[in-house]
Amino acid sequence: MIISASRRTDIPALYVEWFFNRIKAGFVDVVNPFNLKQVSRISLNPKVVDCIVFWTKNAAPIIDRLDELKDYKFYFQFTITPYDEDVEPRLLRNQNKDDIIRTFQRLSKKIGRDKVVWRYDPILLSRTHSIDWHFDRFAYFVDKLAPFTNRCVISFLDLYTKTKHNTQPLGIRDISVDEMKELALGISQIAEGKIEVQSCSEKIDLEEFGIKHGACIDKEIVEQVIGAKIDVDKDKTQRQECGCMASVDIGQYDTCTHFCAYCYANFRPQIAKANFEHHNPKATSLFGEIRPDAKITERKMKPLKIFVEQSLF
Image 1 (tube, rainbow, N blue to C red):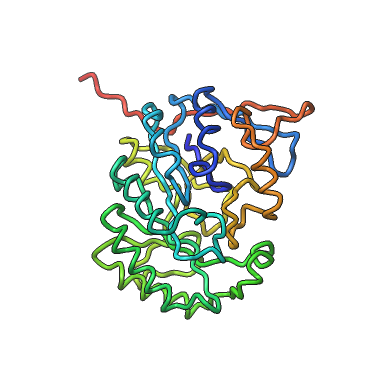
Image 2: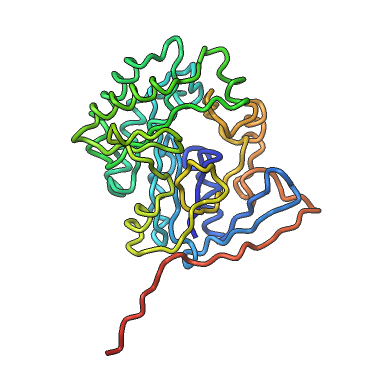
């Protein structure tokens, strides 16, 4: 089983104490966001957890506690984008992007560059964020991060209904196919010989620019991290363009307080703020107590590793 921690919120930055409480307890409850009476109880026993994939924009709060995961295998999807407080208002509170870059470098030194994937994601265009502006910032980040990771993952902003609402004051607009190709060409040229670039959940084919379709929960990386082959299918709950392998996400929507304008995991910042303030690090689920009338179902889990029996002869 692969644990995703988490596409829905930044557990390493915001919910470290809760996460390690769940590791010690050996299980976590995940509430169905569409039916609060349905709860899945997920085992966190290292015998069934093949790998944990962390998603974060600031790993500083978790770095010094990673030794507590000595019985687990894991890697990080670490997002560093070039945006300021107008786009990422709470991420940069009391720090700047160079601080986050240093955190990325420190994490890489601690666990290895093969276990830290840099996400330049999402790419957005607006009145103040031009294509040339992205090239300038991307080149700066490549210089700082390429020695500490093997891969950069890019994607272009999808303007979902709630994303449009949250980004409206910023003048963010749709990106045309020609602009995607121009961005891909420039990014590829900047990265050439320094870092591999892959795309994430994109319909457009960018292989002519040396950018392959990638996967965040990547079978190849998981196998490298755990040192074994795994038997796992594509995640059927994700978009068709998503190349991720099946995993179990232990986060919840409307709980991230970075308040990034482009976020799809928060419906409204006010809701996320209220949920965060009522968070109980000792609770079995990330947010709220389990309802008395909820049905808790223990999800059957098994390891994905393929064990090959050695011949007796």
